[in-house]
Each structure stands twice: as C-alpha cells, then as structure tokens.
Length: 138
Image (tube, rainbow, N blue to C red; front, side, top):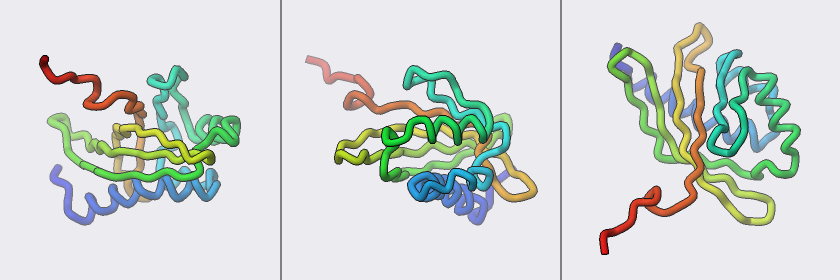
C-alpha cells in the first residue's frame, strides 16, 4: 500500500488533534483519535500501558493538575513498514502550569477504519538527556 498525500495529511492532523482535545478537556472525543482498544504505552514513565479509551480517560482524570496545560506536537514523520503497517513518529512538548516543560517522542501505529485513520498503539518515550545520551569522543 502506498499512502496518498491526502492520507498523510489526515494522519498528521489526527496526531495534532490529540493536543487540542486533551488541552480542551475533550476526553470524550478520544474515539476520534484512537481505536477502542488502543494501547497507550507509558512504560518509560514507570507506568503500565493503558489499554482502551476508558483507561486513557480515567488516567488523565486521575492525574488532574499534574497534566500539562499545553501539548504541542511537531516533526511528524509518517512511513509504511515492510509488513504494511503505517507508523508515525513525532515530537511532543508538554507545558506545565508552573511554566516548566518536558519533551517526548510519540511512536504510533495507525490503522484505517471506516471512520478514518486511528492510532491503535502509541508509545511515549521521555527525552531526558541531550543527544539521547550520545557523547562526543574526548
């Protein structure tokens, strides 16, 4: 399968909408972004993966004021794998209420549904050190 330009644009917009929906508190609209059985992998943050839309919503509400006030997504790259999966990688910036921010990488697996593209699996990886820990030789 070769993705069309329109499909690539739709996937990029889908990924961007995550920040809008979450920041606006529209957690009931996550079905417009994710499959019902989405796996939202937070292992890198010391948490078990969330499975399903209800788990995502409950975890978001439980985090309460710990949630960022702004999610920004950038550097979206969409590609097809050799086995026909559609994958996307993007960067996320989260701004907290106190002005501090954090950076993550989103690795997404996407599927085409009757309602359009949806994310079936998302892995978040925190960006904690420059150059991912690669150091210049001395």
